[in-house]
Image (cartoon, rainbow, N blue to C red; front, side, top):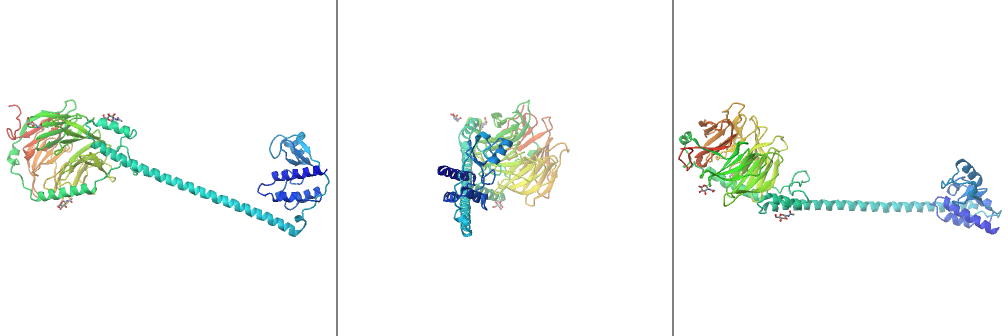
Length: 580
Ligand SMILES: *[C@@H]1O[C@H](CO)[C@@H](O)[C@H](O)[C@H]1NC(C)=O
Ligand SMILES: *[C@@H]1O[C@H](CO)[C@@H](O)[C@H](O)[C@H]1NC(C)=O
Ligand SMILES: CC(=O)N[C@H]1CO[C@H](CO)[C@@H](O)[C@@H]1O
């Protein structure tokens, strides 16, 4: 009898532990175990049916079982009446959800042993004490939760901190990588490799399939450029100071071809330098001291021609589209070509007269229309239809800065350095002439008034005249006053003027359109007389380039045919006469 009562008490304790909220500690179990006397029924009704029943009620009934049964499968204790109805309705255990049948229920026999009422529950002070204990337990548990929350918060902030520092490390590494790639590109261009294709494939391997310094973008989405350093700016400033000093004492050289000689010029020679199937010479440059002429053709080639011998010295093949601009860098025996294939090529002359491609520069994203070399012979600028111009160091062929004009959408169609080298003039496809301060790369002046793309631009050696050519002819600008003081419109409105150039002394101005005209340079106020008109002998009606030879002793002309034509006085200056 006693044994079975003990078992029942244990079952009740266990059930309470299982069914009562886990948050309430062992305190209640101790209390129920401590019930030394009194009847079971009394305990159960007081215990389970009392005011604090919420914390110790059975799940199914909320009442202390009058006829307790236990489930064989789950071991849970139920009121017999309620569980039977539940099984009839659902056939499942209400707690675990498992199938439950009447056969699974085992009735529990309880003895009529009288259990004493717990001491605490017998009086109001006792009950207050119990409430106090409950309250303390609750506060403790709230405190524990609070602590746990605090720990979790700390862990979270630690994780966030780690994430943040990881991001910083990644950013730093990316920056280092960019620097390394820029350096690599620099070295790559300095490396004495004649065949640039090898350099390209090698660098591809090194930079993980990306060509270094070509695909690398800075945070603003632009390519990373080292910029024009302070020492370069000093060099440019010194160059300007000395040249502009000389310009003040400048005198017209006595060897300059006199006006009456120029008036008598005729065509001396016509050299078929380029291919017939894609005829046309777009650009000419003259190497004064070596008497070489370079031509850039529609046939994708540039040709270096020895005027003394009348022979081709070298044919520079490599561009995939027409060569729109060609320039000698006299000191370094280099030729720089700009092409519609978006690239700029630098060619190195050698002892045997051949020019080999040393670098292929791919900084532009559209046709390169102009190349101009700085007076120091250490830098050059390229201008492109992509609306940017690039400033290059010649020894490394590294683009030091790329200047994009965000205020405009048209591209550059021409560019020229001022003879002192601190000012750059550019012409756009939108008929605008822009003047740039090279040191700050700021657009310092802008000339409007032309119609159509500005095809050519030339600064006079006097330092303050600028001539620009476009669809509507040639305009002359005074750089001291920043204004247009004369306009020549020698051709009809459908014939663009393609070329304009001052001779080196600043005494003559040549214009090319449907023919070639030479003007005598005068002052802002005095008239500029057209002293000679040469007919277009190519039959194409399109003169692309006109250049004065040394001392204006001859004029080189490129047209829309394959021939380089030289005009001058027969028998003078060692030029070979055509025919007789
Ligand atoms: C070039 O040098 C001259 C003489 O020192 C100076 O007057 C002129 O302002 C300089 N040009 C520029 C663009 O700084
Ligand atoms: C150009 O030809 C002349 C005459 O044949 C020759 O003396 C000179 O060396 C040549 N120039 C070059 C750069 O080859
Ligand atoms: C990785 C790679 O392509 N390396 C080549 C770089 O160029 C040299 C010179 O031609 C080759 O010998 C390497 O194999």
